Image 1 (cartoon, rainbow, N blue to C red):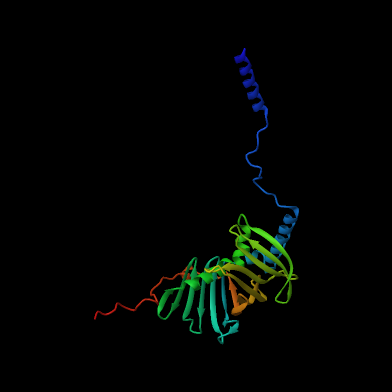
Image 2: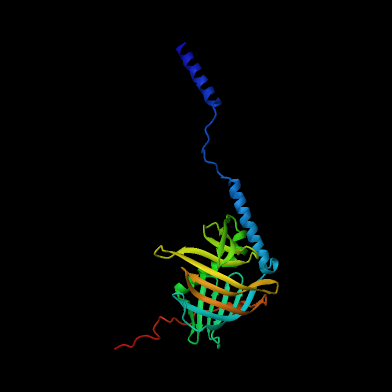
Length: 278
């Protein structure tokens, strides 16, 4: 009898366990749905960016594959100009090929292709200094073309409308674009024309100091269906570092890849030859 009772109790316990609801593996939902306010904010940001692209030329701007520029560039030190300016010719091919020729003789050339950079002078072709190359790549990867033509189409990109603002004494709307790597760029778009007035982004140096880079865009003119800026100011931590005035621009001329090819022929930091034995 005792054995029968124990067997019945064990059977009842097994049935109760089978009928009891199972606890979920995790109480945290796998997907957190954004609130309606977040959705509306992102929609507002996207609408402003779409207006910006249309103002720049829409399909004409999006389909630019290469560009030629000519103008004059000025360098600054501690926010003050330190030269009378140098004529420049720029050749650019989307997304990451760039060639700049300086001086009237066009005898100083900087070439950037992908992650590589070169400096060409009468001495030959040298690799760009690491700090110079890092600065160029940082600006290139946060450029207006990259943000609006690449980031916006990538999975995981988030958009934020920051509200009305004033940029370069002009009424603007501030929008931040953040990619999946948590890298962000903030654009200030003219309230009336929707054209970009200013672009900013931040980065930390090797000592973990926060730096801010900015570019100010001005003097737009219509060229081949594209609203083309003819004045660019570059700012680092509040100080102007460079200013360019562009006189002529041409798009989609079919620049050959050979213009952006280079190979190192000398090292400026290496001795010209082996030391003589004494």
